[in-house]
Length: 258
Image (cartoon, rainbow, N blue to C red; front, top):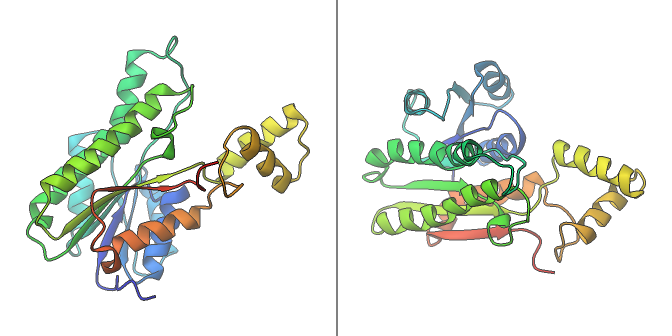
């Protein structure tokens, strides 16, 4: 299937590593020119150098000035018409010990980092013939755990933010959606699960560890973790002309209920 992304320019925040990098590579494979973003210029440039026609931008999305610089640099060589708000962070905590500052930080990293760029993108996108805004959330907003409430609360704001923005942009050519993954198999997650496996006596075979982790901690019908490539494929589809009738949705990619 041709997703018809040739000629489009996509800014993917936090794409200097991890899932954001995989999303950028998939978009590039589909023909889009991708703008790799990182807080560190060297890290962003290294990834961009490995992707044909990619460019790198660096900037701190936790400030208005930093976000404005990122948006300006991303549009220097041509207008961005796909914005993927992938950047975000998580943190450990609970209701008793997590200070107000940590709650504020989670909101800053996971919500305001996105709204700053959305606000910068809208003046041009509103009048453009086509545009996409894709936010990255988590399936945990539907089934939050008992730990890390400040993280889930911040990501939960992206659900209402996405729907509200979609309503505001009714009648325009912009499509806005939220992708909410379940637990993703990343190197960090595998390291954490291997540590758990050592404590629980699950052995050291990754397939067995993943099976036990799903059964005891992350139940889903697929019986495994998400792959980063699967998240990227969904983002690519939503970024494409094929998804023109999908708007204001929270799309879960979590292996299904169990």
